Image (cartoon, rainbow, N blue to C red; front, side, top):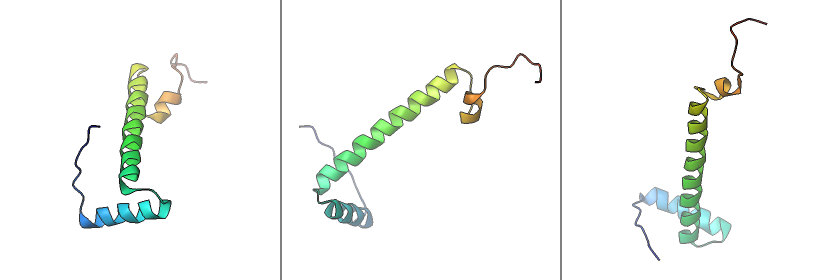
Amino acid sequence: MPSITVDLSGGELAELRAEAQRLGVPVERLAHGIVCESVARGRRQRRTAESRARIGAVGSFEAALRPSDGKET
């Protein structure tokens, strides 16, 4: 299985170990889940941004607006 090495500070590793212990899972499994979740979240955010760009929206507010014909209602 492929692997990676991640450099963590002592404090970061202590937090990761404490969370793994609290959840009752190995540190490696917790770290794997965190990385996979982060990658999936990034993909969702990228797809959302690309969709908004395609419709010409700048932000979430603009994405909810319908195109205007220039007349005020």
